[in-house]
Image (tube, rainbow, N blue to C red; front, side, top):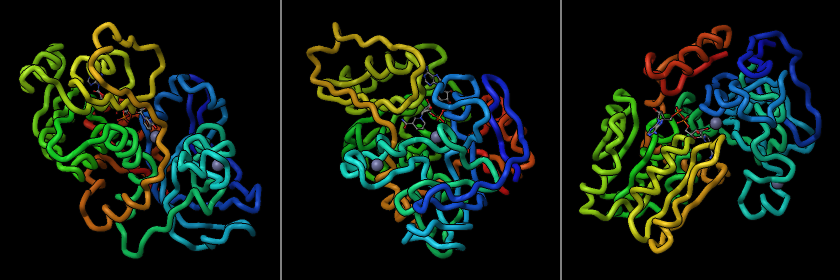
Length: 345
Ligand SMILES: NC(=O)c1ccc[n+]([C@@H]2O[C@H](COP(=O)([O-])OP(=O)(O)OC[C@H]3O[C@@H](n4cnc5c(N)ncnc54)[C@H](O)[C@@H]3O)[C@@H](O)[C@H]2O)c1
Ligand SMILES: [Zn+2]
Ligand SMILES: [Zn+2]
């Protein structure tokens, strides 16, 4: 089968690999119909993710059909149409029993990281019963690819952790696919103000279309000043960090109102300063989270009911054969205006 393989920092290839086999009775082998590229895959290609060894097939998102299910898999059988979750969960360990699948001691974020992933014709999915979801009849497959990772990530790490509430004022720093997923799902709770901050005018324009009430380009470094002015000196109730660099985390520290929450989503490769000398008396909370994907079934219902339309995040389409071009396009987002690139087998 064809597979996209990470060969070490800055090196990647599309090559032929053997089709995966069941390794345990709880596994399923899934034929991938549609997959996509995540910002985290770019972090891997830069060499930022040491758990991912050279030789690994990347990808942790996708929709497909079950090719073969292990003898112990009870909820899925060959031919079933499924969403592959970016998190594999055994369903049995202490963390899984607490709903913290991201820290499953037997799984967690392993697909396209510690085991071969979905940017291939087939993938082996461990703990299939608790790591796959049925695609409802007639559902839009493209929209559902967004349920593997970005929608639960924006919602769980940003909106739920940030306790977005009716009438609240929120700011989302970073209008990439993850920030936009937080923007779409924050609107379940009717916040009064949603401020999007980025450096890219195209992404900010889209944010306005997707429901932001104010957009700010921080190229001039004046976003903090503008937000403080807009909120009569208070700041925002929820500041969602969706970039993963020190500057964006510090922006969140500078705009959080007394009693507010900073909900970090970004994957950080270097340390960011925590200004306790300014924050110690402000009654704030800071949260961090690796997506658990516990809200996937709920989000699936909202997509089915057209409460949100995540397929509007898809800007480009490629065949698996063209995945190197897909990476080029996705990696050059400021010039290509790419958000999510869809890859079809
Ligand atoms: N916590 C999790 O479980 C989890 C899961 C998936 C992805 N992530 C992480 O979420 C982050 C966002 O992912 P993405 O795919 O949307 O990334 P992305 O790179 O597409 O988007 C980041 C956006 O931030 C903007 N930006 C850069 N510096 C900025 C600054 N100083 N101020 C404001 N905006 C700035 C960029 O212009 C870009 O639009 C990444 O770090 C990714 O690795 C975390
Ligand atoms: Zn991801
Ligand atoms: Zn577990």
